[in-house]
Image (spheres, protein in one colour):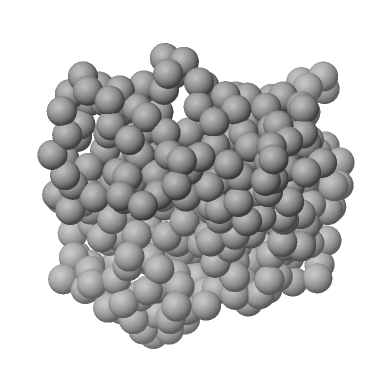
Length: 374
Ligand SMILES: Nc1ncnc2c1ncn2[C@@H]1O[C@H](COP(=O)(O)OP(=O)(O)OP(=O)(O)O)[C@@H](O)[C@H]1O
Ligand SMILES: [Mg+2]
């Protein structure tokens, strides 16, 4: 087992643009870290540099305290699992799993014991004699995992290993992977573009965009205290609503005006608003922080939406509604009857809202925990 440190990592493929533009990240021994971000943000490139499959343009990577910049992939004591399972088609499951150990000249009895133990953990013991083409996608992915486990590496590297599986199998395999990590406690770096996968798997989630780390924190930190508008919009499903407007000083504090609505600001937001009065800002409201109005919600905490679409989800429903400005926002609230085309009044939990500077990466003005700024 080992900790993995990335220091000022830069990668340029063409010598002109940096697709990874200066990444610092310390991954603790036994930690499960997920790199998440949109397509092209540099996740796989970062992972491949840790694996040694891609040269580092500048910076250093250490695994277990050893600088590995010039160490060949096979000597880094890592095991990588890809989206494409990359199994050898002519070999049985057993041989696929045993392959790396055989290359290392591990004694046959030990290979046998390790392959069987890994197969047991993954529930594929009955498949050891089969060839990959006689396996389902989920089974193949388990074999690919098994092949990584038998090597007992210092670190697992995963690049979207579940994305070829259908939704149900993906969710099941995700849970198994988490359980496996709880058993093995091997340092793991996992890449995905799926924020839900990141939130459910990671001890820590590293949100990337444009070759930079936008924020690294626990799933709850990045969800509740997003460092900027990008993280706020990327983490959480359905996505946060953003309303452009301004903070104005009011008789009893501050209010936000934008999208044709006016909201009194409360709690942490009111403090942030003090220094921001008179500037163009963006209010961030999660869909679940609006609810159909309770009778005694004071004016200044409600907004009226013209209901356009209602999607029943069972206990809750998603409501797409128009602000007076015409902007469409989404509300997730308790299921109740609603008339399409009518105006409905919603209560806003303004104490949970966020205020951002304008722009794609506009800074969150609300209180930031120290970890979120790291
Ligand atoms: N071998 C390569 N040569 C040149 N450019 C590359 C190479 N590999 C990746 N890139 C570019 O580097 C950038 C980052 O790619 P990377 O594969 O790291 O993204 P990613 O975050 O893994 O995206 P995805 O979610 O689509 O897998 C992209 O703009 C990509 O086109
Ligand atoms: Mg990728």
